[in-house]
Length: 372
Image 1 (cartoon, one colour):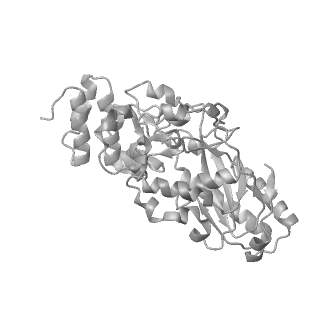
Image 2: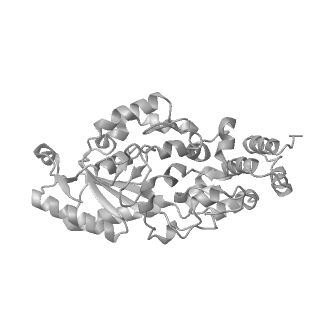
Image 3: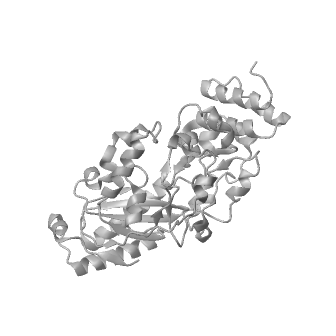
């Protein structure tokens, strides 16, 4: 990836690190080498000017598209101003890491089997947060060994950071109409991470937009959550409803959920650029416990202890057993009627949680069974 510019003189003056232009270029090349050796498929550098993204963030919040994710509003424009989040930040190192694999049951195939549970592909293996954060820490340590102590902080989807905007500016791809980052040589099945630094580094060229007139992602969304290109209403999004949402799933969206029990990948599934996606090289991202094509009735039978044990180290664990049962109850309500499905639902009809009971009652009604 070609480097576009060197940070302006005023940025260099504010930096505690005296790097000549030549030293800065050389350091960036070493950072790329370090990153690739640590398993990142791409490393880019950007400055911290995200002013063009601030109006979009504000409009999104004003329209309440964040739903109950109050932390999005609480942090406000700090997301678009890296130096307010980490004072002294001058440059951001942005990385991506592939997570998809052709060795798993294709997501599209699972959607066609209503007695199976469709789990978002990113959540099939171990939690990416810890793995990537450890790698980013090692990356920072390698830089420190090269130039001495410097200010930094690593993030992996864990703080008020506009990671896709930073990744786009760092040349890792462009933000597609579904709001995910797309890379022309790798599609969109990858994780992002960042290292905020106080180093005055040369920056990469922002990626051009290549979605053209394609709107397949908008058409594919089961709940019409992509209300317009680049605008996702989380309140309608199955990923939000099954993961971030702590309360009932609105009845208007339950049938549209189908058998999706954790997240939704439909918009990525139809994206033409994902024909260029690469298999992950990380064994930790491969499916555990058959989650690429699990049996809904089996999953619904898990008690809380089993759920916690099976989901140890998984991002799914954080939604808790109650939300897990809620999601599966909806999927079973959408499954073809059978004595086995109805019997499974009846085992949770007297569950201690009103949330679970509500969704079980709804699901039984879908099969013509009253709540009595």
